[in-house]
Length: 351
Image 1: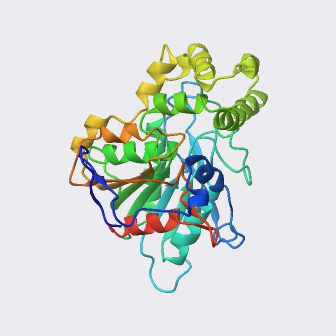
Image 2: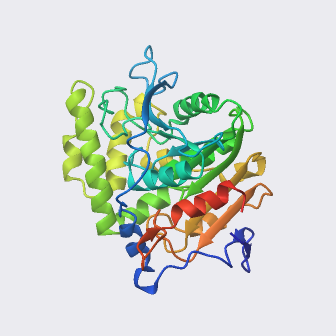
Image 3: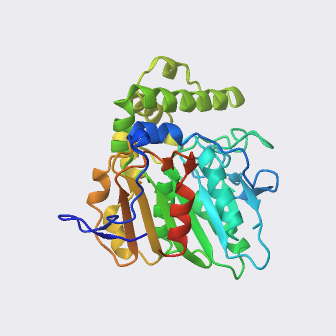
């Protein structure tokens, strides 16, 4: 992928070789909708091994004596010869290890000679082997970076002498970037590169953008509310989420949740405080010490592209802002195909 500079921007910007889908599917909304297209033949699900990880101390305060448990799926490379490395993937909000983008990324990585570990964050998962909401009584918060880092460290150790890579999409991209920044103080074994697709680097602006668009607000609200109600059914003595049913906005729901359950984690007073706490600190990129690539789109309807313009330049950081791609889309037609995995593969190889 060739990069160049756009006037008035300090970061590398894709000027040549940018993703340019057919004009029929160029809009951000169309790209985002097409992201759900799942090809028929994908390597991975029939070859995966479920792994339950001890993710350390429970910072929510609900079960301090019990370790956090996170479920992931390991799949070995499907090519002859030694593995080229271990790729860990982190899903987006209300996604999981078996979301479409995770499976198509896994398929491409396996065919290219990489092993893949798809990690599910707390209260996220496919429900194939374990009820994800029953694993930990405490609620998921985007600020629970310590437990994610502990789990990622255990996966990194699995890589042995092989290179280790972290890949995240959307909210998972936010976690990936924060892990990259954490690497300087608490290194991950053999970490070579971090790649974030459409990362939610500013949680407040992303939430506001979702709330302004009825289609996306309905999608995320329905999935989040369903998750919370599932948690309530398992732990009725801990949670009562009935008032959320009538709240139309995600920001409003978050405000209510923080005010009633903030004593479990973080002590946040408002939703704005909470969103700020798990946004990516752009100033921290000055301390980056691992090669990192951000791949996003100008027409992402969920993550405002303006959030990326303020990121200060750093020799280890590459930012690709494509004119089209939507939110974790990057899908073309004639033939219908996902281009996101190839963008990832190029980034892994330092192109």
